[in-house]
Image 1 (tube, rainbow, N blue to C red):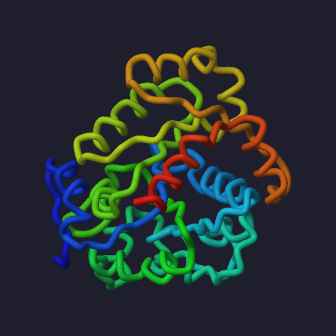
Image 2: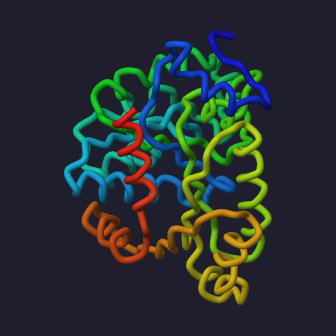
Length: 263
């Protein structure tokens, strides 16, 4: 199926990428511990903050499901509103399916077949227009993406580091450590974790919230970059940028982008 290779030797693949002449993608992949954890708002917020610093950063949603373009509710449309990028939604999300299912199943129900080669080819134009991309996944890292690949396999194929978005409340330690373990199994560097108040009531009333970030760092060897607040009402680009500046340390993301440019 195209150029995709899924194996536990992802680290070797990434190290050999430059020597083999395969395309080098620049950016970071935003994955989550689950669906609905807030990957879209975090992707838009960090991209908007980086663009506010004068960086030519774009966004890419390789595949999305659950709604069709046009009603303003898809992740691609929300990414464009949050970043102010002058792109069409179908450029940001080349593959959109109506069924609220994992991409592999949603595509199958629509009579389409997703392939790794097809996904990569669809992202090429964006990679050429921007110095780096923040790439938002679908659901979590172990979500079925094609007939024989998970989202984690796409991240390994791209050869970019991952940023994990996690909930703040009870259960997030387990979900975050398992996500990091899967990524590391495929040789994918984890740049850090962003805790997101996806459910403000749970996040603020859950007694586990105060200690979860420290425990994730201790047991996972991960760096928690901050806790993104719940934003009620209209979520503008300005509010997203301000929330990042006040609550999230994006220096590891800047460092990754600078490293990618120098290679």
